Length: 286
Image (cartoon, rainbow, N blue to C red; front, side):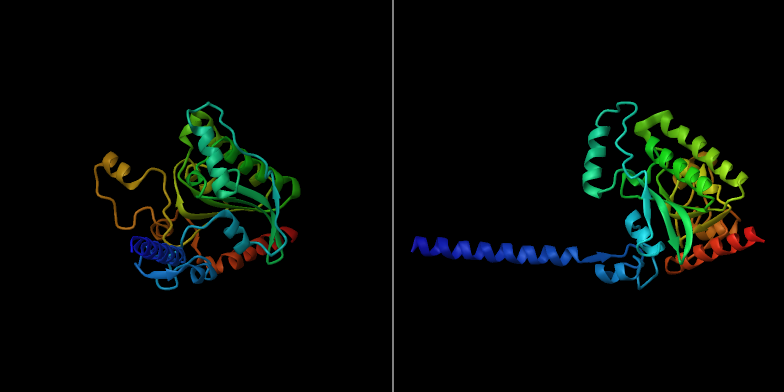
């Protein structure tokens, strides 16, 4: 009798575990849009370029997905892929955190750089990744972006800088802040050569990245409703002692006030970028 009860309980527990596994799998296949609150099938969202099919919210995406969306298949050649894992100030716990993130994200830093073609138009790309320390800019990020700009100068190619960042990386202190001057100087050299630079600002682009190369492109494009600014709205309100206007620091507000040139839907981004490169190349050949 007791043995029968134990067997029955064991079978019940197995069924519960099985249902729990099925439930977990189901949860893993669905996501909730923070904007419209709709429950969405993850695979359908991915097919829609990680844009909510209900309200058009542009979800944050990895550098890999971004490159796959922008670059012609089989044409992307990554450069400086092995650069990563630097702890210049021996900040406590920082190296371990970097190692964990490398294992989790399968990338070595918060930016991927390389050369590829967009609808046949060749360009150098530097694509930041918010999954790695929120795209914060440390020594390696600044160095990789600088080297990408120098590669564009060497090859006489345009550069596309896709930005997503929480700003400077505090674990690297003043060395992180130095990257602002370094990347800015590299872009100035590119500009002197008459080469095209395009900055694509995605959600969020803030801090030292906004205050340096992200605001210096010949053409500055943003995704819809992207948060773009230096300090956060709450910090600004506390500083100026004023209520900020509706939509402050969103792409639409910045477009209205002349800080960016155009807002482009993700589905149109590749077409717009390739056309801009083509127009510039035609102008340069005249």
